[in-house]
Image 1 (cartoon, chains in turn cyan, orange):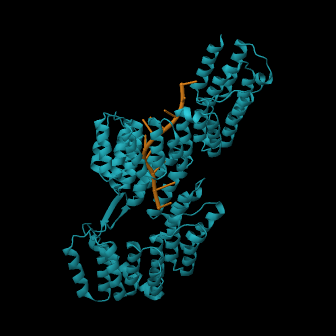
Image 2 (cartoon, helix red, strand yellow):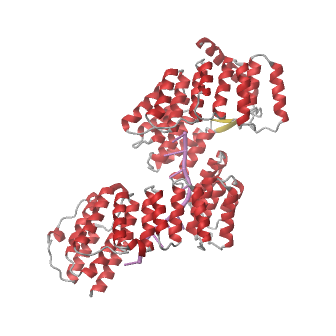
Image 3 (tube, rainbow, N blue to C red):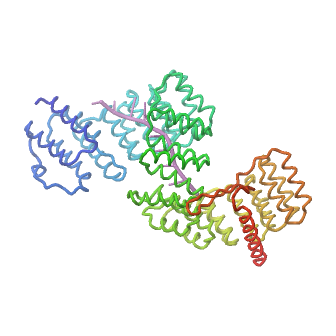
Length: 605
DNA sequence: CTAGGGTTAG
């Protein structure tokens, strides 16, 4: 066998397996030794006992290196090195080990005076991108500049951009892109993708149009990314334009394009057209179904989302964890505990780990369906918790009035090294509000910016106003709003109006209502609250006047809706809705509960 | 022989 044939064989072997197993490598090694007598420097290698499975990954580089030591001709080696680097597993969970192997090989190359070329560099950079190895990527970048590879090879530039993109350094992605002497479709797509992934969909779309100006024709991959940018922007007319581009340019409508279109139409609010695209897809996969389910849930069409899931089940298709998260989310918002429990059982039955997305969605579902103890049990059993798990738990506890517990869980976060975010503080402040903990609320509110460098948003101010209002500190609440560094919005005015209702502050309420109407003239919330305030103050005439004024305008009704599941039947209630069979009894009971609460409030103050 | 793909939560 000549060296060329040998190389072809080695290359084929390495390429066909994603990660080379030690056994295969040994076979390859012995094969090489048999067919081409080489000086055997490490006789131990062949006779060494097989290592346990978990050691395999780490022992690769040793085998590879000793294997390389057996080879003689350097010209053969460059291709071989390239082939080996390409086939090297880059497992993000063993990041340091993978990087170590990679750079050990590079060092070995350089030590043997073999210079990494325009095939070596992209595959090394690809591994760096997979491992999110920014510093190592920069080292290769420096090498590529020194050897002139960045100016001569578009693959080198594109993979460099990719490394910087996955590491979140948009500035450098742009820099490499701008300095590239030649740009192809992949360069543009990588730039576009970087913008979208980093939360700049607008810039991504602009890049797409610049790409079109540069007479570059987009393919399926590019368009999938542009469509995802449209989804993020919620810009239906833009999305339609892109759909037009796909149509005009005869782009193949494969399953990826179809899924991206379904997602885009749903996120842009055209659920009917999304369904049409979905129905007309010649091939669908689990992602197509997931796009429908999570897209509908995203639009608040939870019932429809569950219907699609049931349709999926009827067709005998296996849901994956994304499906289940979408289903759990819908269950949480509909209060359908039975279905949520079914998903939980499915997760257990199929030995799906209740961690990450699934675990968090389960916690949220149980909490929202009123089963806070089961939410807590899932939370406790999770092996890995993140800020979402903690937030779901804290918000859930706060809503159930488990104030102390909520604050205890919050206190646990710094101990396990998880930083709270803005939503976590919504839960914390809501807990304080429900517990009447004014001083603590102030403390957490201050901590938000002083310790965690989070800027309080209008929602947080709203929580504080609510807290002060419920605690009877209506003047402080008013003062708090006056001293806000940001413009109060409906959230804040609504909370203050609510506080006025509790304390029967009619005059203040009237001025607050005006403010609320200014920022939210199209909603009916202000009118409803205000008319309740008038009624409570026995000012019936004003209340009626207000209701009449409301009727004259064509107001958007706040979709006040709740549902509860009893013995597997979902009972849905909309605001003012009296269609339920036993609505008379229900309203009577509600009134009784309200009077109990009022008495309790009176006793408390 | 190399590079770029969609869906997921509080």
